[in-house]
Length: 333
Length: 159
Image (cartoon, rainbow over all chains, first blue to last red; front, side, top):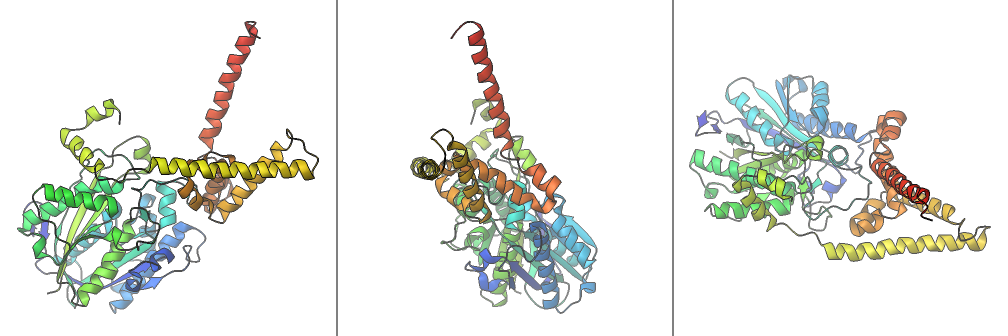
């Protein structure tokens, strides 16, 4: 049901029956290592290309999530997924393996919450019993496409972010147990004219603020209504900017406003400003944050995944970076 | 940012960019310069050492030792690229490891390694000069212009 301008309220409150997160070696050294279901010691995952490794990462996360829900592959009625590679091949190839009806999504790093919002909408409208949604990214394949070869010696500025090697997947169902999805706010594309692909945090911060403020306005809520509000991948540069922007707009920003891009890696890991990538917010949400919800440490959270909708071509042609953010409310009821 | 570009931005965009700029960590230009100076100098020192080695132990003189010295440096750089060390060195050194011949070798080797998965012809062959290609194009063009100027000066009876 539409609430306000751009927020859906899900009266049937779909359940997140299970979720899974799979990561690479670098993620395994981070503080959230225990929240991953599978961690790989090798970034190749035994494959002969990084693109295949990314697909493998996603397939494993899907298998694990389906297994944890006590379901079979055949029970999944729809699969909603996205990634960062050209023509979202990792998602489509995973859908080929799953052989489930599939909708491919692209929202850059906001894909995780775009998928969760749409999956919830499908389940809420009785259009399916079980829906699988998720997102993936692989450091080497994404850097290869968007930036330079991984072994190229180019110095990155202090605003650059590190693409996470991770996949996060959730199974949604009409009935069952687990945290429930109660609302989602779909973001607008916001472009503040920034064009530096090594500073995506600053480019995406206004989109995150726009969506959070729209969410609060549509539902008449504030930060106090949530135990945790997490943005997806603004990192050390973008997150303080988002905070200051909201303060400037007269919103009191509490300590439980955090960022997935600053959670997945430790201070001692050389990721410069923090993490990014479609898999980062997916793995942090479907691993760490959902685990905390299940343990009862959190009651209601808002996840706002942000995406920079640029292409390697568009920034070479000096286009600015359009950005988007989607917010989803997950709660224990 | 150029004025032309700035004019296209709306006042809100301009305001935000100033707002964001004030909150971004600045590029440590001085620190980078000092590091580049020392690492770049150190690479040259190694080069000098190799050159001395060839003139002392082999039948090379100061002029002819240049080629084997460059080849050795390229070999070391490609090896370090393959072992995944060079990019870490570069994050520390910046221009210090990018400007010497080792940086040029790294840009070719890294692209070749990266695209190995697409095969030898379309992958390695087609992408090897992805980064180095523009250096070669503009290097050759600049050499052509310089040679042209020199030829004209000589033709006019300059020297």
